[in-house]
Figure (cartoon, rainbow, N blue to C red):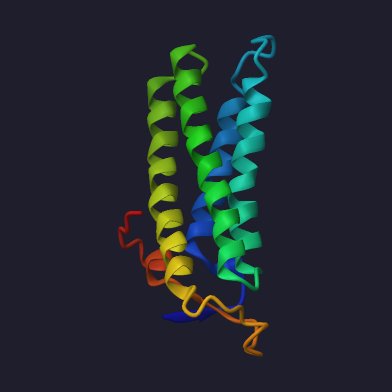
Length: 151
């Protein structure tokens, strides 16, 4: 496995970042008076995904990182549901909806791989700090190569 120094080098983070951009661009087409606040809510949830990935890379304990990654993945599923709802309300076209779902699917695959990496790295259950090891994480191969991993 490769070492990484910066979350911004991870495919999982970069793909989540692309998703946020797509969500923001698409949500601008939502009606301002839809009453549900769907535009604000979908953007809010989308931003949590790459932010959580970044936060997880800085965690000392795998369990802490996993909690954050599970929350990010949960937000990813919420965004997916909101995309379908936006399509149902004809706020977005079928093509826009499909493009977002395709990006969400990519993000799901990568975040699941990242979660599996942290699950495997739990090892002894002791944190790097407790073992006096340097704060360095390894990049899961699946997070950079796109290898499909299921949870």
